[in-house]
Length: 465
Ligand code: 4AD
Ligand code: MG
Image (cartoon, rainbow, N blue to C red):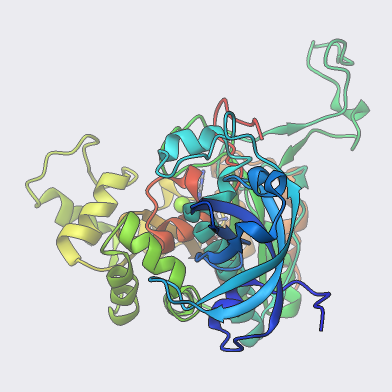
């Protein structure tokens, strides 16, 4: 019986239905052979492994076989057979081959294996066809799915925060402007500034840096919510851990204090590590072999270790007593840099760390103040190789205390009147955090540059694809 539906390679490689008719479609990874027989391996992205097609030269037109080169796309009908060759259990004896698209060997950029990650960034439109990016993209998908599953199973509602925002209150980073005004001839106010009242939204608008403030509004009605969307920061930070466009997961929980918040963050991260081990082991084994032979061990370690919890003040004492020389000197009141975070995690404790009780002057206006008058109930979760993977806090639910911070930090009340209303009407203790999705994927894949864990990275001077 002729198959009309395509078989995915992932299913065929596990199949024992030798002798059955199958139909596979995919991109050629290699072709070798002699004048009697051709061995063609193809991949369809359903799994890291390829399937081997065996084509007897006598059964096919020479012109057709000639078109089958690395990178071309073909459709193959044939019989699934047990493979005698090494490294694979099944192969396909081809009966019919159709070439969908050729790939000129003279110009196809992925002709050879083993390109550098830097080179692959320059051909981001083709790199999903490599083993590495296939693995990364499948893991990225699995983690996104697991995040939704975790929250759904724990009674959270997925809430969509706006991407275009008129509020600049969060102060999490420099923002990109969104406008439809004529760039050459914008309407001006008498003082020379651009008149945004004539812009599309009747006010100045930007791309959001975070969905938190809106998530808080949701939590004050649905109790448990989370956002999962793109966020944008226009900082000129060209580091292996920063993107100008990244995805963030921001749960927000009514009736949670900072300790509940830490418990949730730890449980959530461990769940995601376990999900990756349970569902992505082929890809993890590949990445473990090719890039980072401690990767799988590190994922297991995070699941087993109880995260170390300490205050910022205690951490600063440890750093000052460490005898290390730092690029950025550390003293109470300074923000911790990646080098400090990684020292605590990798050298001092040897496991993930959650820091709390940060100086209020280096944190956002909405964080709940401690009784000492100088620290806030912030929490940063620090991971090996990554540094900060989560930032969060208990929120200031007291209207007066919040107003005081807003004034101290010169945040115009007219920008946050709607946010303040939640403290005016039915305020409640609550907390939340933000997980950087690409930092998570960095950790789970063992890749070392954040540009290699998102399909099309947006970084300073780079928005080609
Ligand atoms: O610590 P951040 O700035 O916290 C917030 O935005 C809060 N509103 C979160 C909340 O409480 N709901 O960012 C949260 C996380 C960081 O820990 C980091 O993992 C990631 O977002 N992140 C970035 N990831 C990639 N590129 C960047 N430029 C990032 N900036 C932050
Ligand atoms: Mg932070």
